[in-house]
Length: 139
Figure 1 (cartoon, rainbow, N blue to C red):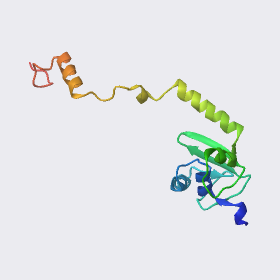
Figure 2: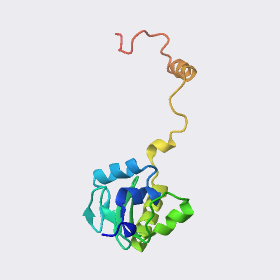
Figure 3: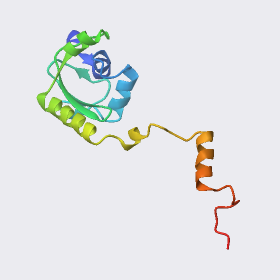
Figure 4: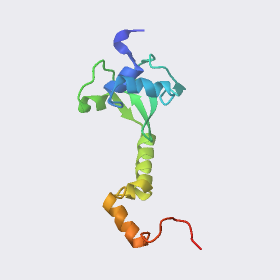
């Protein structure tokens, strides 16, 4: 195996800018979230041009074909030349983005957040809790 034509999968994922650090890439590989040519792999697996890599970035699954290898992390424009995303993966990502747009996360609608002390006092005044010392019914 020629070292000039192979590179470790964790290093390649970092160089291709799929993960911010090499240790994050290795962690995702250890969790079984990265597959090379359809099989779960280890971080030390040597990658060659033409290999297919299945990975997940957040909730988005991606399938890419390795087009080039690099030992160093360069600019994003150079990193994008290291792989080509499959048409099926592009379609799945577009569908996931559309689903997210149509059904956003419910917590994202909460823009006010937790009430402040002043808000809590106003709520208590509106409920007229001031005349009662307990929440239980007094008979």
